Image 1 (cartoon, one colour):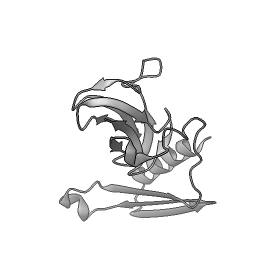
Image 2: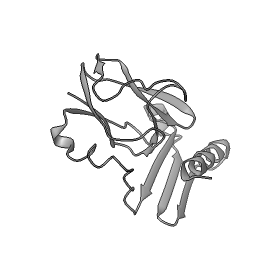
Image 3: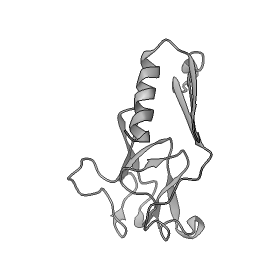
Image 4: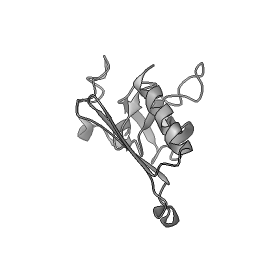
Length: 150
């Protein structure tokens, strides 16, 4: 079983439990979850998730040139939360966008799955997709660069 599936199962068990907080450390991975009962009234997500690794995430082959210099690659769409990055809606369907695709503001760029919920990530502006910095099925962290639009 891979790490993503293990984390998903732990999250599901935590949500179904009566626990308010959970912290789990295995090797170089630390997982902390908190059911924020008081903050739910303030509009925060009731289950907050923080995943930290003390080891840098290994770059997939071919991603070296994709992520060389984030500052020079236009407007970056960043991950709004931790999740699994998907280029398209279903397995056998083509990706929503590819490098060179023309997009309009509001077009779907990709999907981020978190807690079995598929979240469409929309283009913040119109332009051309200049770079895609992650691979299909890759776990991404909050704030990680996903797609550049120029």
